[in-house]
Image (cartoon, rainbow, N blue to C red):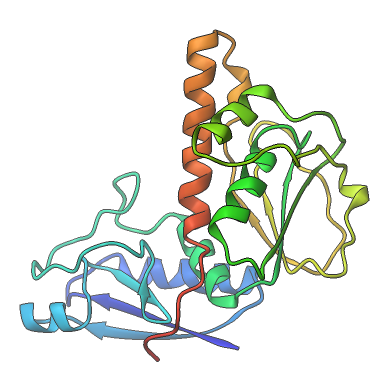
Length: 238
């Protein structure tokens, strides 16, 4: 499989080359083949026709990295999340992984009690039923009560969630591993899967009841935002 990457830029864009380097490096890291094409946007009409959303715009198999961004006729620099003109690493990784269409995804964190549990529940809701989703940790522990609560708030059934050690997971069918550790060391997974790292802060470090619940909600929403980028789209260009 070769993934078509289109970089739309204006003639004076200083960030297109940096963006291409990032895309190529991450494609190498994920072991996916890419074909990178450049297109200079010179007019408002061309911007609309090519779904230009600011320079540089990156289309992966025809879809913008941010998926729901609106095209613009203004030939100006683009600002990605965090205010930068080069897209964040996780966004490029998610787009490449989406295009690779893994059939089995494993979410890993230290204790499999919060972030990886929420990721498993959210991925089961957001990804197609054909995609097998699991989670695990360096050790098995328990599913945090606040993780269950914030998932219940958005209508997800948490009754079947349980904490698991990575030793319980059959590595053979896993095609993608997403690690979520930030402050801890993530477990080692001895498989041949593509690996992506999303360092997300552990919300259980917030000790006051009100701030802890807000932290768990923010963590849930950030994980959901990232998983939505993995939802397969039908190839439209290339």
